[in-house]
Amino acid sequence: MKRHFYSGLLCLAYFSFSFAEPVIQTNEVLVTATGIARPDTETTYASELHTNSMIESSGATSLYDYFAQHTSINILPSFGNKVTPQIDMRGYGSGSGYQNIVVTVDGQRLNNVDLVPQFISAIPLGDIDRIEITKGSGSVMFGDGASAGSIQIYTKARTRISVSVSAGNHGAASGFVSAGVSEKYFDLSASVAHDSDDGLARADITNHRDSTRNNAQRIKLKIKPVDVLRFNLEVSNSSTDTRYINALTFAQFNADPRQAVGTYTHQAFTSRLWRMGSEFDITPEIKLSLNRSQEDKVSDFIAFANKSKYDYTSNDITFQYQGGKLATTLGLQTFDGLRIGATNNTSKDNIGVFAQAEYRFDAFSVSAGARREKVDYEFVPAVGAALKDTRYLNAWDVGVNYRLNLQTSVFANYNQAFQAPDIDRFFTFVGAFNGFITPQTSRTLNLGVNHNIANNRFKFTLFRAELDNEIYFDPVSFINTNIDQSHKYGLEVQDQWQITERLSSALIYTYTRAIMDKASQGAGAFDGKNLPGVPKHGITASLNFSPLANTNINVSHTWRSSAFSINDFANNFTQRQNNYQSTNLALSYQYKNLQWFATVNNLFEHKNALFVQDDAIYPVDYSRQVRIGMKADF
Image (cartoon, rainbow, N blue to C red; front, top):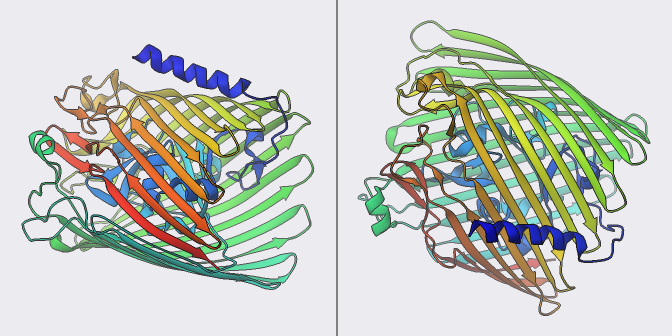
């Protein structure tokens, strides 16, 4: 079986290179991870791009679904909670992977100062213009937490009115309205989104379903008094009310994943953000950018009367030069994060300075960058002495890209990154202080090739990462600590093929290994074992067919291999994380400015779940979900 699988993969790679006569790629795909737009075939780092047309044709109705079904990202609900899911790539694991990825929306960080994953449900999919995924690089620009890379989400600048509504089984309903205008001296756009469902499981003992209600609003204003000066203002608000399931035993999961156990966790999230900034073109080659943002968030576990408030303030000053061959970015970034709890206030404040430069020869590009970051911690309890700590951390990056001919380029990148522990890592599971644990550092080597012809885009990347003090939670001793030494390696394949004028395909394949070399906390029991929660193989494949000019059919399938349960550091649990599978279908019909669509997720009802340990299983995406809707543009 494995021999056939790898043979098929090699055939696909060969077919991608040999299908058509080599011609110049007419539609350049631009990425902006370094702050300067470059064709993705000319960058010195590994990237994965998802454009607006790819997002719209996928049939996905939420950012969670799009990540799960159409990208290389491994994503699962956080112990049943899809609002703040656990995101992983490059083998950092379902348990802590999200802390090794910096997620931004229009440059605004979504990473939290504690163990709460990124609040991605606050981002309506209809608001997204494109998604850039940078792998094994990005630590110079994004700093703390970019060990695996970054996910940069960019929203649309609206110039017309758009309305969409949909409904489906399990009480699913959504609505999205956006409008915008672009004039000589200003651009103004606004959007309102609602998304809700009644969950897949049965009602709990209090007769409540595992339901979710999301609401989001966003206003963006750009003022352009003169050609060289722009002012930006953005205000957004989001709120979520969710109830999510408790764990099932293995027998319960196999018998019926819909059954309810106990009382579902009831949690509410709110986020209010404002951001203002300016851009000044000092000369045609030199630009100065200033941005400041303020975000107030609340996470409320209602049944437990456990409410945390978050106060985040960010500042970003960037100086860019882009000449004919040389491009440089210099910057200063600050992030002040405060969590206000019932018994203590805890803060994590970052300040970083960085420099990134790239020089382009005719067929050869080189890049280099470095970052210095200071991290201050403070814990102020209602009773007792305050605790403080300060860490200084470094990141750097070097890379090359060489264009062999008009169709093919190769690149290499070597990156050092760091993760400063979040504020929860200094405490045990029961809340006792266990010391300021050591920051994590990683060094990642990427080697890749790009091959583009008129009807095919192909990428292949090999990577290896060496880590010191990888941060994790030990489920045996209930403390947060470090894996002394570990490493990760693998390969990634991306292929987009325009087979005919009406038929296209896309494939993403990942092979990932994550090994714990030495872990003092495990007293040798973890040494040489696989990091849990890391699937070895992952495949995302899709076919897009337009039988008529105004009709589109998209069929996709996602498969991720089984893995050790996320608490199984010794690799000896009886039960393993099952493989994730979902076959999805999307149909759409366009008539003038009106589009009708229908989607089916998990067509064959594969029983997916997050396995934490033996008899602690959180079912997810185990039922067929059908949705129909319409979209109108004016």
